[in-house]
Amino acid sequence: MYQVITFYHFVRFQDLVSLQRSLRETCRNERTKGTILLAHEGINGTIGGSESGVTRVLEEIRTFPGCQNVSWRTSWSSRLPFNRMKVRLKQEIVSMGRPNGELSMRTGHYVASVDWNEFCHDPDTVMIDTRNHYEVTIGTFVGAINPKIKSFREFPEWWENQGHLFMDKKIAMFCTGGIRCEKSTHYLVQRGIEDVYHLKGGILKYLEDVPKEDSLWQGSCFVFDDRVSVDYGLIEGPHILCHGCRAPLSPEDTKRPEYEPGVSCHHCISETSDDDKERFRERQKQITLARARGQTHLGD
Image 1 (cartoon, rainbow, N blue to C red):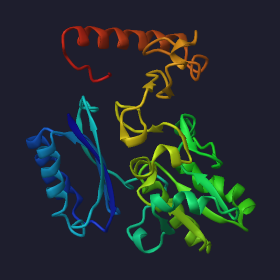
Image 2: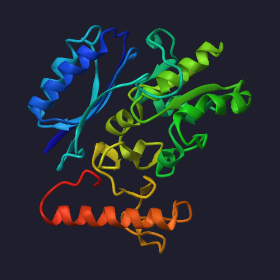
Image 3: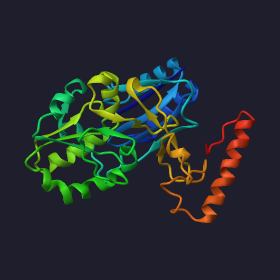
Image 4: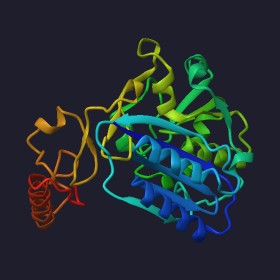
C-alpha cells in the first residue's frame, strides 16, 4: 500500500529557490511522487509513496521556517496515484488572484468536523461549496449552495454578485482539504463580514471522522490525483476522469453513447473539434500500448 498525504500551510517564505532545491532532492531520494507548490505565502501539496519516504519528506518540510506545526491528511492507495514528482514555484499556493502571506491572522472561524452537522442544522446558517462546479457534481453537503464556478479565481466575482443574498445569515464554507476556505473566508473578513466559518480539515477530514449513518454528505469527494474520488474512510471512489475535458465520470456516465475512452464524454463531446478528437485518440493509443508493455505513459 502507498501512503498519500495532502497538506498546506500558510507562512511567509523568503528564499523559495533554496526551499525548492532541497525539497526536490529529498523527494527524488525518497522516490515520492505528486505535486508540491511553493509561494511566498506558504506551501501546498499532495504526494504519495512509501510510508518511510513520505515521512522523510514531511520531516524536511518541518525544517522550513514556520512549518514546525504543519498538519496533513493521510489516506492509502493500492497504487501510486501520480506519475511524476513536481515541486513548483507559484504566485499563490491556491489560485485566487490574491497572494497574501498573513492569511492565518485573518480567516473565518473554524468548525470541527464532528461539530459540522449541528452547526449547519442551524436555520440561520447557509453552507457554500467553494469548489469548482465539476467537483460539486459528484458530491456535496445536503442543502449546500453551488456557486457553479469553473475555477476558484471566479469566487470573488461570484460573491460580489450574490453575497448580498446572505447578509442576514451565518456563512459556513467548505472545500476538499480546507485551503480554499482559508482564502475565501479571508476574502469575506477583509470586507467586514465577521460571521463567517469554515470546515476545519475540509471534506476529507469530515469523511474520515463522521460515520456515514450520521452524515450530511452525499456522493463522492473529488481529489486531484489518479484516484479521482474518495468515499467514507477516504477509500478510493468509483469515478474516472474524462481525458478529453478532465471531468469526473461515474460508472453510469461511461455507459452513455457520448463516452469514448480518452476522447470524450457527455460533458465535452460538442466542445472539442474533430481534430482534437483524433489527437486524443492517438494519445489513448499510445497509453494503451505503454500499458501493454508494462510502462507508464505520461499522458495517462
